[in-house]
Each structure stands twice: as C-alpha cells, then as structure tokens.
Length: 221
View 1: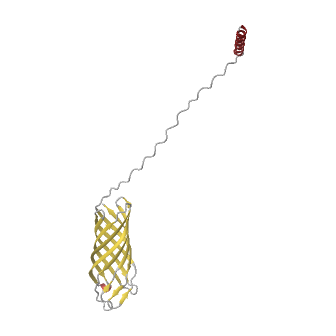
View 2 (view 1 turned 30 degrees about the vertical axis):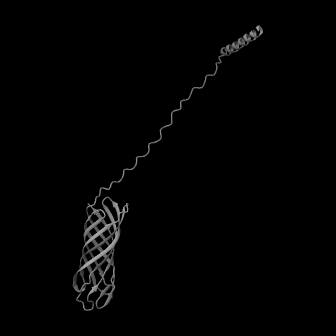
View 3 (view 1 turned 90 degrees about the vertical axis):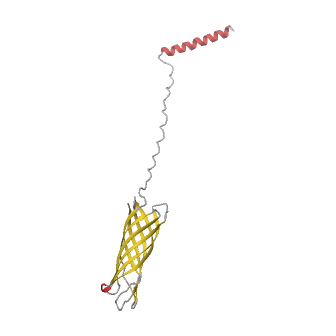
C-alpha cells in the first residue's frame, strides 16, 4: 500500500514538473476557438402585389358610331333589259343609338354609289334606317351580334331620276373592345330596297340589293 502511494505521489510530481517547465519556456496551453456568430437567414422577399383590376367605367347608355366599307352590289334586275352588272363601291354609315346592355337601338344614315359596269350610268343609295342589335355576351372583350333594320331609301338613277322606297337590312358582326367605352366594329349587312321605278324605256322598274362589309368605331358616352 505504501508502495502504491509513493508511485502516485511520484506521478503527480512528474506531471507538475512538466507543466511548470512548459510555463517556464513561455508555452501556454492552446485556447479554445471562439464560437462564430451565424446570423439568421434573411426573410424571403415579399410577393409582388397583385395588379389592380381593370375597372370598366363605361355603362350602358347613348352612343355614336361611324363606319366605312365595301359595297358589293348584286346585278340590277331591270324590267326590260334583263340584268345589268354593277361595280363595287364605298359604303358610308353614321348612327346615333342607345345601348341597353345586351340590346341596342339606333337611327342610322348611310350612303353609297355604284357604277354600271357597262356605260356611264350609276345608282346612288341614301338610306335612313332604324336598326336593332342583339349583343351576345361572351365574358370577353369580343362581342358577336345580330342586327336587323328597316327604313327609307332614296334611289338616285340615270337621267337625274330618283325614287323613294322602303328598305330593309339584316346582318351580323363582331365588336372588339379596344379602350374604355370604345368598340371596333366589323360587320356584314345585306341591304335591300324595294323595287324602284324609272322612266327609262329600256330599263323600266329595277330590283336590286347590295352586300356591305363595314368597319367602324362605336363610342359610348
């Protein structure tokens, strides 16, 4: 037992001597590395705000429209000379109306003139029509429609003759909303005046119709 105690005491003295020698030589025990500070990760970027909804401030109400297009006439069926071919011409139209939401009513004035293919004569057509439209809601900026109208037609004929007759038309088209309260209108019209009379012996009464392809703008206010 005494021997074990001596050996333990000797080990302690040796360890203390080695430690003292190390301190005497200027050597110190290594210091522990400092704990590095790790900042928390930055917060995720906030989502971009949703775009503000486009509010249509245009409500049903009065409107005006203007349009121009190509008039494609049918052959004029004359009483005595059979059919006369006619050239295409420019068709013009202006209207004042009221939009009820899915239906429209308007008063329209139109004008067009067509030359006979053979000869120097021509026919002019001035119309005053009451038109009704049905707009088909598609939930988009494109609105198909159907239309029909009736009214008065003044026919200008060769030799400074003229006649006033009843006229009617039917058609269809597409409305493209291009701005608030502004619609681009592409439409087709089949326009037919009643048979009109002429004093020309080689012509007689005339039956005629024209197909109009129109492009215009409609402004609600």
